[in-house]
Structure formats: structure tokens, C-alpha cells
Image (tube, rainbow, N blue to C red; front, side, top):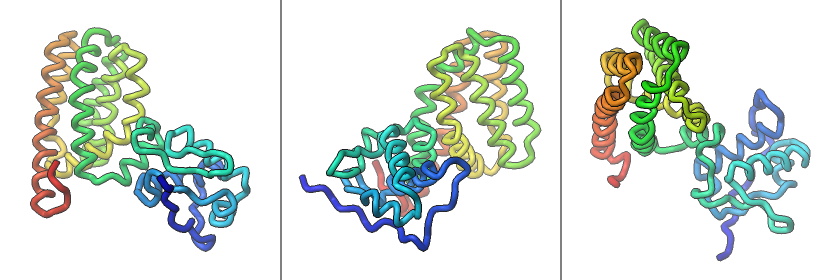
Length: 257
């Protein structure tokens, strides 16, 4: 199958803004974000090194390092004398921090909410049950501290930050090292979801009692109660996601699955 040709590379008059990190990371972020946005579709043959160098005003070394970075994230495949081509979506490492951030920024917000809700329903009930079984006193203190911050939050930003910390503290208390990197990676995605659902509810403290039930179950070392409390909280969130989805469908913003 003949490869699709990429759209023109960005002109030199509009280079990417410098990132905090190295130059090659800035280039990789620009290209990666454009891939996630769909500007470079799977199968697209990307501009060559010389074209990227001209468009970004950087050296070949910076471009090559950026390409290596994107290859490691599963976004592109580069071969000598052929060039770099965008990989199928199934190859993208969406659990990579950068890729997930680009995904959150580029994804249809309704689809993002539905997918994140599914991930939470799979992961969080059992994580809470494990935390109730394995948590230490110090870990319990972290959960309680995050809950207190939620109770004291006066703004949506403060509430969401504390909400993320609450769920991350539970994940760290689960006693399973393999869960830790997964939870830390989806931290930004959780923040985006909480911002959307909390703002839609209109009352940032509405789910505080549900979070308290989770806290009490973990404190009491009751795994079944913790599991059920999380499921109850997620049912509430699921109703909000469903309301948002139905509203968007009525406005024609998203197609029904």
C-alpha cells in the first residue's frame, strides 16, 4: 500500500516555543502533539531530516534525537532510505506520560471521559480493596491528609488537586509495585476528568461523603467495604459521564457508539 504523504512541515517563521527541557524534547513534543491531533495520520510518511531542520531551525542531531524519542513512544517507525512513518494507533504507548498528555489534549472530550471512566471501573475498586489490606499507618495518614484537603477546598482547582492526591495515595497504599507507575502516569488524565465532572456537577463537595466512605473502609481494613464504596462513587461519576454524553449527542457533538 502506497504511503500517504505528510502535509508540509511547519514554516520556519513559526518555530515551536522552547520547552523547559532540551531542544530535541521540544521538537519531539511538537511532532508528537501533531500526530495525536491527527495532522499526521497513521501510515503518513513524515518530512525528512532536512525539512524538519529547516522548519524548526535546529541541527540534524536534535531532529535525530527527537525521532528516537518518538520511536521509543511507539508513535513512529524510522528506517534508512525510507524515512519516518507514523505507526498504527495500536502501537502508540498511551501510558507514556508525554503521549498521554498529548492524547488528553487532542482527544474528543466525550470519548476521553468514557474511556477514563472504563479504566477507573477496572482499576480503582480492587486497588482500594488492596489498600484496605496492605496500607501502613503512614500511608493512611497520606489518604486522610488528601481527604482533609478535599474537605477544605474552596475552588475547583484545589478540589481537583486534592481529589487526584486522594486516589494516588490509595494506589500507593495498595502494596503492589506494578500498579504504582500505572497510576502515576494517568495522574494528569484523572485531573482532566475530575475537572470536567466536578464542573458539570456544579458542586465541588458533592462526592465528599462517598470519598469518606472509602477512607473509613480503608482505615478499618475492610477490603470488601472499600471495594463497594469505590464502586458506589464511580456509579455517581458514571451518571455524570452519561449525562454529558447524552447532552453532547443531542447537540450533535459526538456520534453514538
